[in-house]
Image (cartoon, rainbow, N blue to C red; front, side, top):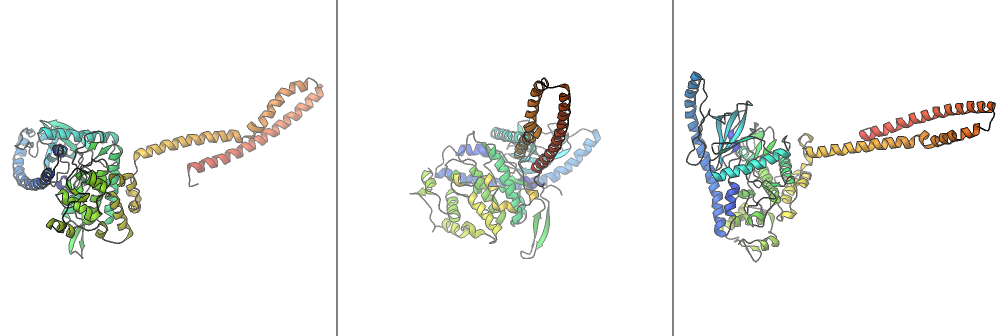
Length: 534
């Protein structure tokens, strides 16, 4: 299946809006009502940018057609003189690198096609000429703030790779990075569509529950790994979750009278670490994309890892129903939607916030206004969104409810989320095991085996009748014989020696038989400890 570049997205720009953190820093200086409105416009602007991105992609496609013709001519020229196309070092007015199909970047990466574009730069499909495989190359604008943001992402990706060099924890692999004439470039493994793009291309038909279960499990597993390493992603959303392979099969749905796509593999990877923040780093006031933003972020109460858990709850809802849980671009309306769906915001949070959204501890919101009617008509209590009353559907919503607790301290931790009953039905081959835990278990098993060996040896010594009973008598006999023989005649000595030898032989035979029996019993016990099936 030919890889579709939409997976790297134009809605937000999948492999990351690297300028997100810097843009947020400027917003975090002071946020009054006007600033919030500006922030909402920024969200709208993001959508506008995305639309522009789509348009640019269309134009680029047209240009690519023309370029392909030019490329054919150039390829003919290359065939004539055998020399590769010289790389471009020109930037456009927005700071994007100007390139053409066939250009060689850094004497290694051959440009094949443009996959996506965002405020940060472009994502390009390239071929690594040294390793002879295709990858995605993120080319950052030649703009200082985006360069600095790219360095932050590279730092996060390097630390993730150091902790998880084999990629067991489902975070996208950074294969290389370099500075190309002022453009920070980051090479990633090639992946498929995002779960959002697949949803959109499938006319927003919800994912089957078993797909939601597997994707949700992997998402919790990947983000738990980040949290365990004191890193908060801060921008979890369907656009930043990519299928490893988005190949699908189509089936006709007679009820909906249309073809419905079903992805063949639900293995995913987490991407876009451009705004990921370590615990010790500066925490911007506003983080996360609007629809997945936690209440403590909106209320400027400070945030940490639980804000990621809130985002995951919103994502699970969206995968299950095919719609966004909080479809808004306004802070006050966002809070009103939360209260409509999840109940009243806790008094502590309302009292502690310095924002102007509450009046005497209650949300300052007019239910009778047009905005109020919109929220009332388009939002309903969480459990009324259930598509079925079956236990597994209710289990999913119980998990979502625990992830959408208002108080961050009351929100379920991901280590507990992975043990939630909703994931009990996950097939064994889809379950993941932390290699670090396996190493710890192996060390514990080795220690247990050493202890078992020591216990085995001690038991052999303690259960050996020769060592515990007969050995003391041998010593007594050895010390007493010289004194006994000194007082006896020769004949008596000879007779006694014969008797002693016979007794010793009998004792040795008995001891050997007992030792063999004890060894057999201990070996059986040891094997049983090693293999519980015995």
